Every structure is written in C-alpha cells, then in structure tokens.
Length: 288
Image 1 (tube, rainbow, N blue to C red):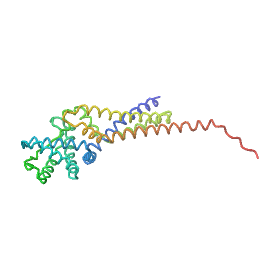
Image 2: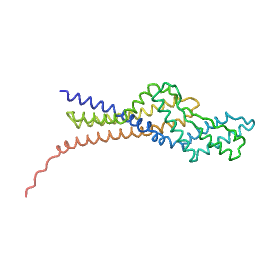
Image 3: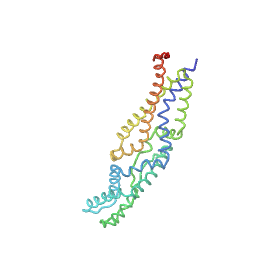
Image 4: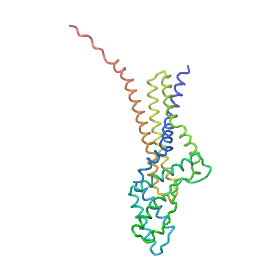
C-alpha cells in the first residue's frame, strides 16, 4: 500500500540532493582544501586582466607613499611597467600562490566566524618588494625610497557573507555525505518502485534537470556577484576569479545533465526493445 508513495518520496529527495551534493563536494574538496584552492587560483597569475589589476593596485599603493615632484608621472610609469614586467616571471607566480594561500585562511576564518567584521584581503607586499629591487637595479630615481607596505586588495567583507557563509560552512561539513545519501536514496526508491525501469527513467531525467538547474544557478550567481562589486574593483579580474573558482561546478553540472540524459535514454531503449521483438512475426520452420 505504501510502497508506491514511499518510492516516489525517496526518489524525489534523491533528485533534490543532487545539486546540493555537487555543491558540498566542491565546497569541501576545492574551497576548504588549501592546496586545491591555491592550485585553482594559480593559473590566474597568467591572466592578463588579473595582472593588470595587480599592477594597478601596487602602483597606486607605491605612488601614494612617495612624492618626487615633477618626476611623479615618470616614476609612476616606470613602476607600472616594472610591475607588469615582474608579473611575467616565475617569482610573481610564487608570490601570487603565497598571497592566495594566506587569503584562503582568511576566507575560511570569515566563513566560520563572522563576528569580528574583518575583511578578506590579498596582501601584495611581496610583489612590491620585488618591484622595488628591480627598479633600484634599473637605476630608477628615488626607487630606494619606495616603502614596502602591506598592499591589500579586498575580496569581500566578512559581514557581507551573512547566511550564505553559514550555509557554505555547513556544506563543507557535509562533504561527500550528501552525494552518498542521494545515491542510497535513489537505489532504495528504485528497489521499492512497482515499475523499476520507469522509475529509473524518471530518476535519470530528474537528475539531468537538477544538473541543468545547478548550471543555471552558477550563471545567475556570476551575474549577481559581479553586479555587486565595489567601483574600485576590476570587473574583468573579478570575472576571471569567479570563473576559476566555479569551473569545476560548471563541469559537474554538464556531467550530471549528460549522465542523466544518457541513462534515461538507455533505459527507454531497453524498455522498447522487448516490445519491438514481440511485434516481429515469427518465422515458420522450413520443411525439408
């Protein structure tokens, strides 16, 4: 009596858990894991928009600390060119990775404890130090006077995380438990189903729809995040950062959608095959 409705409920919950499972896996093993986070952000060191944003931030910070009179414009041009030149070196990639590792710790602290109201930043001081040395070696006037201060680029205010931060931390705690629960519920629902092949088709189609919904959510989230940026933040650089952080989610959405459609199609074809065979007339045995 309760077999059919129980199966339907289990399969519905399993499908609803699919996008949450992808999010929890991503949050746990790509965002929470420091090494994976740094590896995800590392390619951005070669992104031209990110390099331009870093050059602008370091140059502005340096020029605020020194005054060379009529040579101000010339020195500013030298500093900007030096930062851009340095951003093509291996040392820049090392400094970028170190800065992102430190930023990762700040992000995690902000997600766990939002009571201090601090900001999540990337400190570019190591890059400023390297640029100062390069300018001094090139005999740029007043290069020795450039102070190596903490050039911080703000990523977000911890107070802006709100309930998202708490929900994100819960996803990190859940980790693989959510996708495992989705699989177990789907298996149980299909086992209890009266028409199992039909249940497989519907579950696979629901999974494909859930994967498509995840892809749409990533796209919508991109627009909302970028539209909320402060005016002093480079939009092209922010786009590159968002796309790097969510690239695996986008791939997961496509894989889930494709797998769901493939399973549903295979189950449908197997369902129709016996019917086609029954419709074919049997051949009478040939008499000798």
